[in-house]
Image (cartoon, rainbow, N blue to C red; front, side):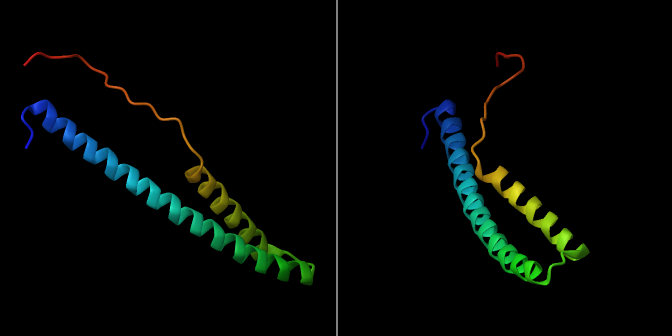
Length: 93
C-alpha cells in the first residue's frame, strides 16, 4: 500500500508505462510476422507474373498493396524518438 499520494500516482503511472511497453512489443512481433508473410506471398506471385511476362492491373494493385504493407510495417518496426512533456500552469491545492 502506498504511503502517500505521490507514491500511489507513481505506482499507477509506472504500471501503465510497463503495459504500454508490452503492447508495443506485441505489435512489433505481429508486424514482423505480417511482413514475412507478405514477402513470401509476393515472391510466389511475382514468380508467376515473371513467367507469364504480363503484370496486368491485378498485379499492379498487388504490388502497390505489398509496398503499402511493407512501408507501414517498417514504420512500425523502426525506432522513433519520443518525448514527454507536461504543459500548463502549476496550481497549488
